[in-house]
Length: 179
View 1: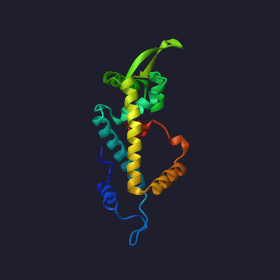
View 2 (view 1 turned 135 degrees about the horizontal axis):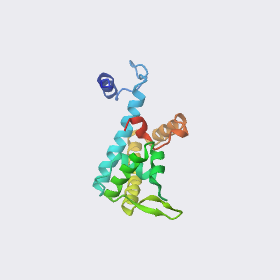
View 3 (view 1 turned 180 degrees about the vertical axis):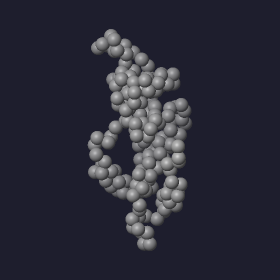
View 4 (view 1 turned 90 degrees about the vertical axis):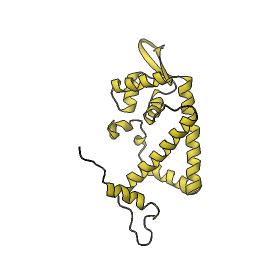
C-alpha cells in the first residue's frame, strides 16, 4: 500500500507552527493543517500522559487501554457492551479485556442480575490508573493554560465545543483509525 502521508504537507505544518495564520505575508492556513494540528495536540497530550503514568507505576498501560477502561466504566460491562462502545467486535474487545486482566487493570465477575453473563470490572489498579489519568490531564491542561494563556485556552475549548457536535464524543476512535 502506498504511503498516504504527504511528507511535504506534514513538514509544512511543522515548519509553519511559529507563524500564525493570517500573519503578515502568510495567508490563512490550508485546510489540511487543522486536523493535523488537532491530532498533534492530542498526540502530545496522550504521549505526556503515558510517560507520567509510567513514572507513577503504570508502565504497561497504552492509549487503547485508556479507551477500554472508560468503556468498562465503574459498574462494569460485558464484552459485547465494551465492543459496542469502542466500535470493535466482541472478539476484539475480548482480546483487549484479556490484556487488561493480565495487567491487573480489570477482572471478570459473575453478573448479579444474570447468571449467564460475565461482567468485566475495574480492579483497584484500574481505578488507580483512571484517577491518576484524570489528575495528569488536569496538570497537562494547566500547562497548556501557561503556554497559551488561561483565557485563550478557555476560548479554544469553547470554540471546539461549538464546532464539534455532541455525538462526536465517543470512545470508538479505533473504527476510524483502522485498528
